Image (tube, rainbow over all chains, first blue to last red; front, side, top):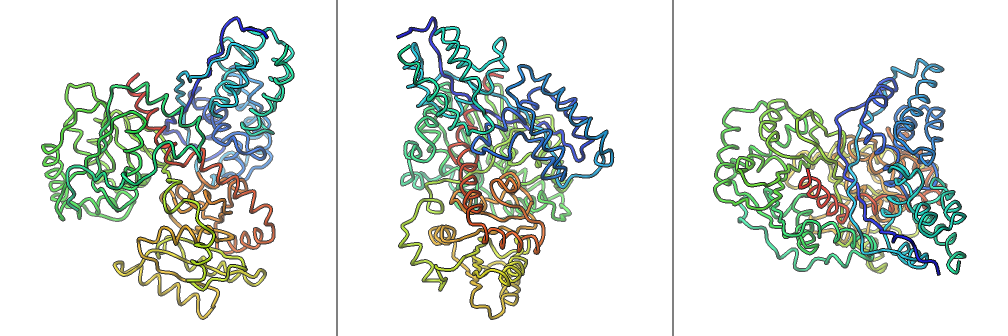
Length: 218
Length: 414
């Protein structure tokens, strides 16, 4: 059984949501604020909202898309915003840039939608993440699987979804550790392919365990 | 109301312990809560409000305070005192903050300040974290001195459109706090103080939300002559125009042309509320002689009956025209019920349209959604299941407890 070069420390992570006071009443205002809001707001309405709604496997992608659909009745734009996959981004600046691009393109195509008042405003918030170590550590893949089956789904989100934003990873924590510390690149790659949009976080946990099980004897 | 200085511990004595919540939120969630609390070892909290019984704030503190203590963070709960004149003023302030017209006389502010000064002398504030709930004790922040304490104002009410004079008066105190907590992003105000979002929460182990013996549910339906074999639509709310009970009856009557169903309107008694009595009469008039409309006036101690009615319902309606957060919606979602609700106040935070329930904006829209959900029970079931998970993730007392720990950690590291 392979012993890791360094143990994996599972973290308990939880979000504190701060209301910024910025609000958009129209798509034009949304575009302005997406351009100017803090990174922590972009994180909150994409990465964080996915955690907040982790039990939904269809129809929810991020807060912007949801608001555009429910409050602005612009399904085409909502679909485009929904299609942005946060796993593709290692930096919030890139995600912000693509959000702006989608909004700008749509408002060029449908300029009359820009000043139309939404049914209710979009309120910008930001996430402050507090992370503390749990009692779970892993030195081997078996210990990793044991711990993974016990930690909360917030821990799964912290290590599997939000991790790729933390320098210098650009991949999820689990894949990084499995490749770097256990030398199991194939497993690391297959884990990184697990779809967070068509699985609940509980489903992600199950898939992680399914992917890892055949490697327990490696 | 003139309470004693310390809130009664009796309510907590029979309540569930932190470990009892493992069955609901999982052992890992409780482990996280304890890990966060451990980081605050050696610190203490004081909660202050204006009543130990009755009302949502007291209900929350009755659970939150023992749970904080059990998690390892010593927490005391003080209740301020005041005469009738003080509570008349604070009730007027409360309504004015909700946007009701109010021409505040100068003596109202004097009365408010005098009682806050009196309470200031009666209480000590040597905890590292002091949380003041709602406007009544807001002036106690004058007690903050050179000690390194963190003061938080927890505003439970909708201040999105407040009376200007009352708000300006309160704002002079708020600026001395380190943080303000609000229940919805739409309640944010331009202030120099960071504002944090804490959703209101329900206790899944309380009488109102616990699992019930099916025999008790059946007996409750029999008691109110409700047919358990036919679909039941229910709105739980006091008889208030803003809850639009007459609109619910109209929607039921429209839907009833297409789908067989019964309607239950259940809420608190209207004996001490002249307008409530009038709204109740209007509801009876709108119901006419329809034997399938059950209008139930329930006493305040009817938590189990309300729970049973919710659990027996096919669909829960909350057709509010204005709403604070709408905890009856939270309760219904927790019971896996498909909910049709007005898109007002905190309801859209709970009902993500077509994912955790459906939003309606009119009588006709409500009627259509009733027909739709009665015709598509599989969709109704999925909405209910999603709704329960939404509550589990965001609107339970354990989440509230966790948010306080996170805020205290953030403040102490700031």
